[in-house]
Length: 263
Length: 157
Image (cartoon, rainbow over all chains, first blue to last red; front, side, top):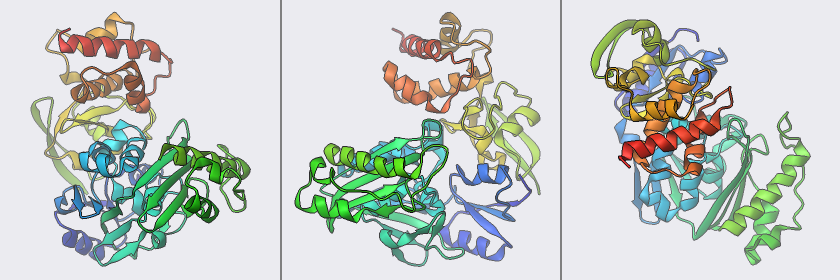
């Protein structure tokens, strides 16, 4: 990887300040995507601002009807958290299915969400559970957060501090993982949330999206049978060596059906 | 940028001047001459570089040395007690849990992390845990057997 200047910070304010005064800084959370990308020389920031020491944005708490997860909380911590497991077991099991144990020990929810990989698991939870993303400046609704492939509503230098998940009455996440990377070829979060039924699909398109026809069908009849007849269009879906667009479209139906049955 | 990085490796404080971009695995292998930790894929997939940082298994090819400054690191070299193999290492020998041996340090370090939180894992749990460790000799069956036997020996059963 190209040379850069490494800075460790102890607070959100210091992180934002350090990033602002650098030429082309990047925050590093767990580094599970950023470091491999830098090794391939696909990214060459002038500065890395390491959030590893920012304890104020680590940890999980229950706040009324929400589970609030600090941005620097690792996947392993989410997966094993008694609060998450009892309130939103679908979120714990999603976290437990990311990558492998060593990746889960380093990778963080904030890093994953900020990176907005179209095949990452967490975006399905943020949109499928109707979460709110908290940053150092504002709050952003989950439905507005992901704007395109690897693109989010975050502004230059803006830092995710926490993600707040309203506790659904029921939810399940099912994915068809790539057998090598464990990224979702297609992953579907289905939830009966406070604001209605949500069906969020990751892996299939350039960014996570809601499947409105399935949501409508599930609204009156929350069973796998209710969405059997829903046609998923392959238009605009991803196609690569792992799966064509039509196969991904088919998988959306299969994964959604399994998720509904698992609720 | 060059920076002096100190950490505790296998119970001993070590330090070296390295670049900001130096990976932990490079620091261990080249600066500390602890070459038991291997670089297999260098893309955080194969797990040959697994070490423990502050008690948790991580891939040292995907962590900067500076990020481990001040940390407690353990590598495969710190597992045995002098000439006496650790029960997990002994189990790999007894069960023919290695062929070429390249993946073995990572397998053992990964297994030790599993057993720490799950002293009596099922075969399925062992196989799921090994998601991040590849054996290109494809000797998984005996690796799983070794880990189950090693866990049992560690329980004193």
